[in-house]
Length: 140
Image (cartoon, rainbow, N blue to C red; front, side, top):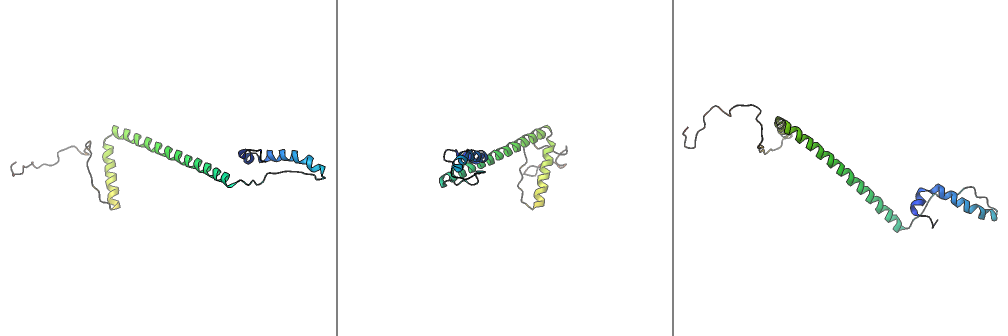
């Protein structure tokens, strides 16, 4: 068994068992024993080798997790880019989204500080009010 690599031992147990059987049968027959089968069922590894396997497995799992996070972030960015293109083509949608956000904040009981974007598109065309503007000294 010492001449077999660890990966081969773990992945090819059946083949190794048949190879061992072919080696053991002639020697066992010399002393009157008939060996019918040899199986590799349990392999004990040194502690440092077990640690190395655990580190490799952990590194693979962390790499897989990082790959999944990157895929998720990429999909999120694609969705944001698509939303930006839709909003660019129809600016009134931004007003609707703003109203949804205000409604959600109101329902949550949150305090909201609002700054209006420079490209805000009014929902209704018209003047802000019918009264005339006055200066600070009261003159019109």
